[in-house]
Image (cartoon, rainbow, N blue to C red):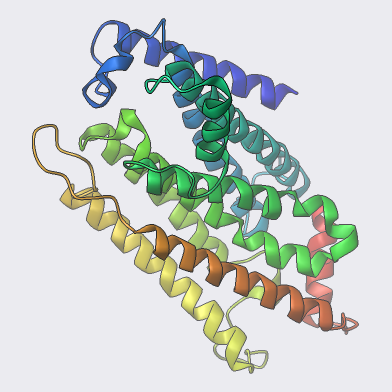
Length: 336
């Protein structure tokens, strides 16, 4: 309750800030959507924007807690594993709630505008499809951006709430699935950069949003290089080096991918070529096409199915003294 209450307070402050900027004419959103220049009439849309920003903020925080929990934590006595895990679970639930409220307020905003004067029944039906069905939004940048946001929301429910089913699935399967939850944050940030009207145009604020991804990428790399569980470490040499080629290749590829991501973020920040729209000129169409997103979602689904199939079939081997199973057990007991 304290975390959710704080999230609502922050959302209210963001809403007030957006409202004031619309009323005094300093918001760049007016250039994109001139009919929405009356904030008192179209307040549902600006509330939707506020919930979107607070949801991204809480997603950012919960990713930080998750990476701290699963990697080497700072040597601060007050920052215990159990405390970090509790904060991570709490902020995760708040994030899902904020995303849902973001969608509900967008639904209300679409009903409120009704620029095409549709009949009530038809309007409600079409809006439900546009707001809650992936690929249902038919026009403009929303064809891509809302598609990405909806995939992020539904993946957050499946991968985030899997924690509460770990007694059924087993801790190994839950941990394996939960690692994919980083994709939810990536899609959420992508959705914001594509469709957040306050970060639409290139400039200092958009560059700041890009720059804020650097600490997360660095923390992810640190988590991969120094995981809390010794069995997840990349051992290229030594008596306990990884002898199986598939896990070795996957772990090495993951670390190289994060390094490439950090390099890409640096290039975007330094060059200023961050995909923003220019105020007076032609802007490129949003990338990618929807078929590419569907293909990526299919690949992710197949990977998740393969992980479930592999871990459900593999028996849990008893841990030997000094083996990785013993280390993992000690890490879990420390978390408790």
